[in-house]
Amino acid sequence: MQSLSLLPNSRRAESNHPAAQRIAPLATVPLFFKLEGKKVLVAGGSEAAAWKVELLTAAGARVHLYAERLDSGFRPLLRDSTRPGRIVWHRQAWKDESFCGAAVAIGDIAGDDEADAFCRAAKASGVPVNIIDKPEYCAFQFGSIVNRSPVVIGISSDGSSPILAQAIRRRIETLIPPSLANWARIAKALRGQVSGRLTSKRQRRWFWEQFSSLAFGVPPGPNTEETLLAEIQRKSRAQGPEFGQVTLVGAGPGDAEFLTLKAVRALQSADIILHDNLVSDEVLELARREAKRMLVGKRGGRESCRQEDINEMMAKLAKAGKNIVRLKSGDPMVFGRAGEEIEWLQDQGICVSTVPGITAAAAMASALGISLTHRDHARSLRFVTGHSRKGMLPDDIDWRAVADPKTTTVFYMGRGTAAQISETLIDNDMDPATPVVACAGLSRATQKTWFGNLEKLGAGVQALLTDEPVLIGVGSVFGLQERDCRIPGSNAKTRISAGL
Image (cartoon, rainbow, N blue to C red; front, top):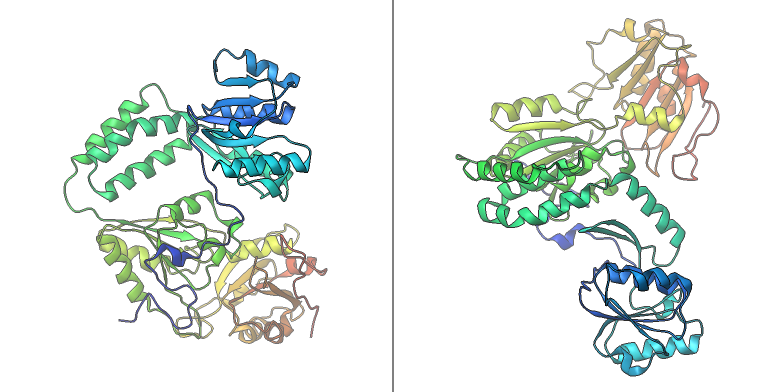
């Protein structure tokens, strides 16, 4: 049996060590301070200092404020009856001894000399320091915050663009429901019960995955906690072997932003990810850090894992209780051999589900700005495989129907058979001048596109100079696009030719 873990020339080999997952360089490490009941020194009486004091007292800190005068922004804070004794106002400038016992120190200081002195005094006392709007003096930074306490999300741009960080915060605010705070409080209350009653790691993960799905749905009701407790008890009494499950996930054409939310959740809950060669590093980066990644690449003309070996590996791992994600480029249900894998797993008694992905034809239409079913040009849309199991053009296709001039046809994996596709369609009375397009590396920085006509398709595909899978579109809709196209999200032009 061929090894599934180390294919030749693989840059993404299997590893049990989390460090091998290649965390990208970080400008800062996100840390969260526990400040309940702890002393924090704040120097300055400005509006900016008032905002920091409000933030710190919300976290339960005892703020010692050093300023001779305070801006009007402090008035509501000093009158706030919900935070009695949280702010001690010292009507004087700070001194070296002011840092004694402080957990952190924040200063709103205009002059560089005083800022430098404040920073040195803090460091001498072993206190982390932040000078507002002076990053060169800061040992830590404040980020933009999404508050769903006890869930708190911090966003930092490392000072490069606070406005960008705020824009990211606004985007996250729209994705995270306010009710998540209540769900998080319920999670905190149930944590002991889950750990005590669900003895296996798989049982606990199963519960928290179900819980997390609920948390992004409707707000919790008055009996939610009791219902969840009953579910914990039911699960703890379950008998018999605990099989894992397999989820077939569509990774889309390559751009990680094309992933569905459900696909991201599947990647975040996987124990093991069996991924194709075409899955991009950007997509894999969204997986759970602890998940083991195994390359089971299948590429035409290259050494590949046998489908039978992949099937057996999935079944073996699932029977060992692992949660498997079978990550496939594009959509697993479109020329992705999903049918064979689903049948095999079901015969083995293993639960299998699918998460659709953006198929290459849809990605091509989006990248080129072309409607595949433009009502003035096409009455139907066909997806056709460009090669059979033997690697040749399939001989059981109704080519007369494919040659219908009112149909848009997209051939998958047509790099090696492009010339045959052209000849066969022309032999079946399709106009040699029919517009066609050939694409490789869709949605990636390496995207290449050729426009031309059916008669020149074979030479056009060769002109792409690529060993990646090639998608071929045939139909009058492709005559609508004769200008330069741009790859979404970049300034790089796709490679386009009107002919050869």
